[in-house]
Amino acid sequence: MVNFMIALPRCCVFAPMGTGKTSAVLTALDALLMAGIVRKVLILAPLRVARSTWTDEANRWACFAHLRLSVIVGDPEQRAAALAVPADIYTLNYENVPWLVDQMGDGFDFDMIVADESVKLKNLRSKQGGARAGALRDLAHTKVKRWVNLTGMAVENGLRDLWGQLWFIDAGQRLGRTFDAFESRWFMYKRKSDAFKHDRAVEMVVMPHAQSEMQAAIKDVCLTLDPKDWFKLDAPIVNTLYVDLPPAARKNYREMERAFFTKIKNHEIETFSAAGKSQKLLQFCNGAAYLDPSVENEDDPKARAWVEVHEEKIQALESVVNEAGGMPILVAYHFKSDLARLKKAFPQGRHISKKTDEDDFKAGKIPVAFVHPQSIGHGVDGFQHVTNIIVFFGFWWGAGPYLQVIERIGPMRQMQAGLKRPCFVHHIAARDTIDEDVIECLNSKRSVSDILIEALKRRNSDG
Image: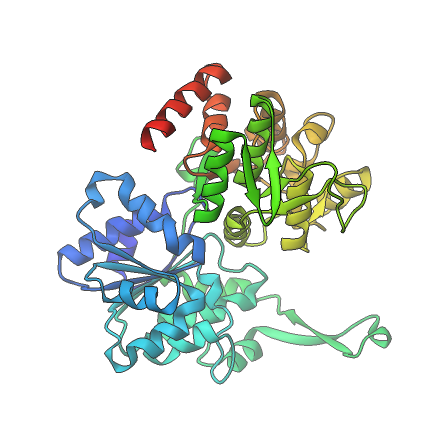
């Protein structure tokens, strides 16, 4: 990946989450900056990724300690201040691309752009389309001399996603200078069999020769990393995505951790035991907290009332879904409040709660499946034919259910299915919280009490 990005001024790197894309990009950027080939780099990414992922990765390695990063997020005043900071690399979320272009005007001086999760650029059109991609259209090939598209899968919703991304690489040289030309070359319309039920009598379909021709056209500027060529397949590839609690949520978390009590949106939340506190802290990490049983749930009288604390893990899961590129994924949750929030945030998903749900998932009809480890750990088979990705949205202390749900699609199951592909396990964890303690407990033989005592000492010493 490093050599490819250095050798080609404009290229795409397609590699699944957990394969080291971020550190590879930083290594390539370090070399290009040191050689004077580029002077100022802009990294575009979803908000959570722009805010913390790139700086976190740079801070993990001593070899990147000299790189100066500035994070352009927040309100307009904060973004302007971050843009004015002298740095080598700037990170910005896609939603604020139009603001950046307007802010800099003719003074736009980034000579390299890295588009992380580049599928966000798919909506480019010559005369219309997404505001994010459109704002970059006029300067992509005039002021930016190097460009890298970075994603797990370039065709999240089909081959039509390719054109917008590749346009930033070659201005349409390979796939067509306009989207109309692209569509005319590789797509056609056919009559729907049930057209009398719909307003439109035809639908667009991909021509049989399209995929092979597109691949041949773009292969010289695209690098695809197949994990099975680089990783052992007899163990899952575990990847932890850290999120940071917003200040208000962090305050609530610390109050509950130290005083067994906090107040959220005029709701008093209290517990009276260490076990109860552990549950509350895990809820805070996920983004919601249960209220007193006497408080009625207005949306569902049969369910216990809860209050939302933050959406950090929801945003992180969105990144995983985007990186999966259409591959169905399993999302393990623990609390019913989290299931309600997940179903709202991902309407295309479904809770796997009965046999018909399992059958639909195995048939590829459910792109995001919400599962509870204790209900799906035993007696469920066949998921390995559908996916190799599981995400833990939340955690619990029991190692048994955790390991069992991984085993539903784990390395042995993949091999039994005749599939030579790794199993990806993504942990979405709140930094400096009980999430990290649970993960340590799941991965070690140390007792829960020892881990919690050590963690409490460490956090108290940090203030």
